[in-house]
Amino acid sequence: MRFPLADCNSPIVESMFESITEKLTAAFSRLTSRGKLTEANIQEGLREVRQALLEADVNFKVAKDFIASVTAKAVGKEVIESIRPGQQIVKIVHDELVALMGPTDGYIHWQSSGPTVILMAGLQGSGKTTTCGKLAKYLVKKGKRPLLVAADVQRPAAIQQLQVLGKDLGVPVYAEPSGRPPKICERAIGHAKETDRDVVILDTAGRLHIDAALMQEVKEVADRTKPDEIFLVCDAMTGQDAVNSASAFHAQLPLTGVVLTKLDGDARGGAAMSVKAVTGKPIKFVGLGEKLDEFDEFHPDRMASRILGMGDVITLVEKAQASLEQGKVEKAAEAFMKDQFTFVDFLEMMQQVKKMGKMKDILSMIPGLGSQLKGVDVDDKDIGRIEAIVQSMTITERLHPELFNGSRRKRVAQGSGTSVEAVNQLLRDFQQMRKMMKQMKGMMGGKLGRAKMAQFAKLKGKGGPDSEAFRKFQGGLGGPKR
Image (cartoon, helix red, strand yellow):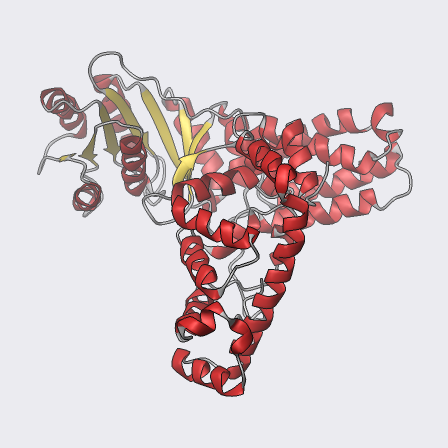
């Protein structure tokens, strides 16, 4: 459905990987449009892929090794002589991206007795303190009882920032007005034992750049506290600098994983594709926005699919399961199946969708749609304007849109603070959506629909976007086949 009030010509901030996705899509389009692939034009296409990686700030050696690995698999006889060689190459690139960034590893080494200690290290400005709060909220959802420790006595207001986060989360914060961080952290672990806290998250100090004092302090904290996990927090927006800092920390500390922050920002994506290859340590978690719940385990297979413009249906389903009220969703689905979908159902649907996050992020997860959003401004304020239009309708009008005449449209426009043109556009789009729903009902109804929904529910944990079940499901919905 279109957003009739959006200004499609206004500038937008490019999201993570948008630029590289565009370049890779163009390179693959040129390959797949050829009648026959040879080793020469495969090499030419992969040079474009390599250039796209370098422009995305991927480490030079990582990009070189990546292309060498893809080339070794892509120029073989099986690819060149296959029925769909271009698609075969896309599949190879996808698999190599997964191998480059993977595996999925959100595991934390829990202590069987006593608190599990997680040390968070990183440069100042990487989002380390906020990430400590996000990790605490994530662990609370997992049934843990975390204690946040304010061990950053260098940065002004760092202690207060962590205390504010702890108050918002309902998570206790251990802090001392003065003292050396190694001793503070040591005493904090004792406090955690006394107060029955099973996880201790140490927010250590950062610097604007790596220096001997920073490394000495964080190493001493690690020596005294014997952490079970040492996570390096890196700002994805700094690109190659994030990889360089990761290498320096890796040389001094026994890192167990990396947390990438600001993946929603105006970044080129090079850090996500380089940091694991350079350090050998897995990307454990990612920060996806400013809110404390915008934090999740890193899934390289899903990230690879989004980089290649294939969408991310599994994450979309998980967001829906976590955000939507099941009763209201079922009610809207029932109305849809009975051809009784009205503006009452539509309003509830819009209010539910708002809970899932930014509209452009949601749409980008739909296979085949993300690449079409380039240059289109999907403004979340438009949802509010559409809601205002629907809320300005009478109950009778919401239930019977066919009643709308000129005077009703004018009244609704005035009541919602919009224009008659905007009301007309919404009515046209709503009717078009109902027609599409009828078509979908024919495809998804009865036993076929139930079978597909059952298949959909089984996708998680079944091999992700590379699984046979996923490909069949995408094919059934008209998504891209690989």
